Length: 393
Image: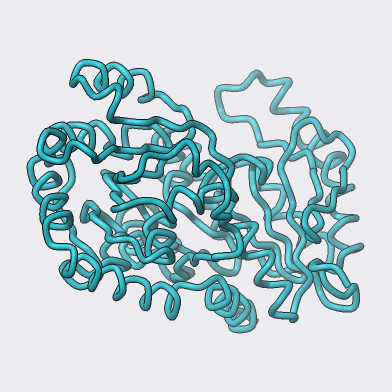
């Protein structure tokens, strides 16, 4: 039997708006949940990828998990041309037929939409047309935050789509509170919190060892403004002279802040001290964690971060900014050190505290490791998702 499971079990659709081969936290959430659901045994996981090029659904097995690529069409907004608005129902209905067929073929009992976009309106309707599947939307942060910046009409449609589901999952208590009180109070009654997890099996220790410094602070995150890496660079510059053998390794996807970070590195005279790795495959990230001296999360906003969990899995001391869901993982002074965001001086002081007091750092790293391996596993997350599906009738 493959990891996709026995065909006699009902299906659990895990929808995502991009190919899971794209590096990033949401891709890892979907892949890890799929594997954990397969091991759990109650459902057969099927990953459903939104792909405009898939005029006809395309199927692909990856590591024992079935991926199905489908075309989804978002309804045009109010500014669209009248002809486009007029044709949309016909086009959307035609394109939804293969999706409805897939729902029936795989007996999908739960459609779990991660990082929902407006294209997911078809997924919210599709299961009802193909067997009354339960719909669970999983919000990760920027999904609902970004839609709110795209105008009142888009926000109304988005909230209406979420309300069509039986449940909405937020990845942290802090983020759930933000959704319920600010972003979408209309769906407060449907909100549940399920923390993401971590999996040692998804991280390989064997790659890139030759490329890494002997002693370094590690940062993992897309090179974008919200990750706060410019403050991290400033903090590292403040301590670099006192720790001449220490380096900073930053690994992430290229984004709008990358050029500015490269220039800042040059301006600070840190070109030889700061390594910027781009598009490291997730399976190779284990080598970065395994060899690091210290991990830092400098994010200015983080609904829930997986990288600090992965640092805990490798028993790394952690310094992090006290934002959103981070404080639900890192207890200040017990599992790591928390500092206020946008404050290079305090970040530098926390680095010194960790580096100069190795026994205390090790105790916090060990505490985080125990916390992560007992409380933040994908098996626990999958169990909570299955329990939520059962609870919503």
